[in-house]
Amino acid sequence: MTNLSLRTKLAALSFFIFSLSFSPAEAQVRFGVKGGFQLASMEFSSDALDKTNRVGYCVGPVLKIGLPISGVSIETSVLYDRRDLKIQDETFKQQSLLLQGDFSCGAGIGDFLGIFVKLGPQFSFNVGDDLLHWATERGDENHFSLQETMLSLNLGAGITFASHFEGAITYNVPISKTADFTWTQLTDELATQTWNHAKTRTNAWNVTLTYFF
Image (cartoon, rainbow, N blue to C red; front, side, top):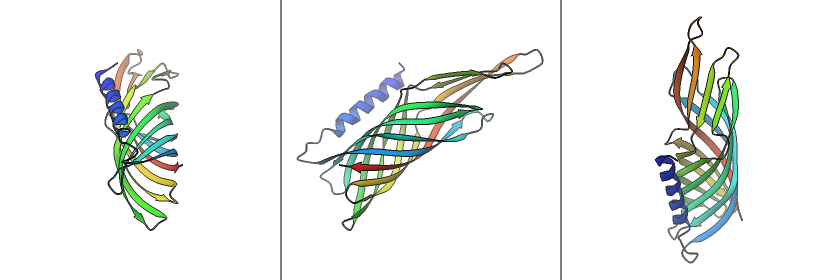
């Protein structure tokens, strides 16, 4: 386990404990279920690779804590995230467990609607295959290694309506890299192979709908 992975997991656990540290007498606690879809864009450090956009989805439980400060709340969610990754002509499935913690600030518009903005970290833990390998017909070797743990930042805005529903659009900005990509290419008629390396980061737009009980 790398130092980055350990620090990320400790930070995730600390934030989760902090979120639960408010007593019910001081805060309003609500439970809900969140689901949505995303458009993810992979950007490589090598100009030889084109970035690609892929669609995915997420679903899971949500805990929302309304603080004594009007309009301010903390929202913690644990989501199963599934997205497809397209590298060259190959498409792979990435599965992650997302631990999100957002500080939200909002205001009501009458008794039915409200608006809010939110900001917070996201900790992603890979729960699927972390090493992908494939070869081309002409003998090129390809290795795509996903990070075990990733850290990113969520920035978003949305609306609340009917006191039970919350819709949001969020942009996820990676802080750590998503994966390492290593591949070979034949460089001459003698079939000499050269190794190439690239790192990738994945940005994503998320559209989610939450129902609070």
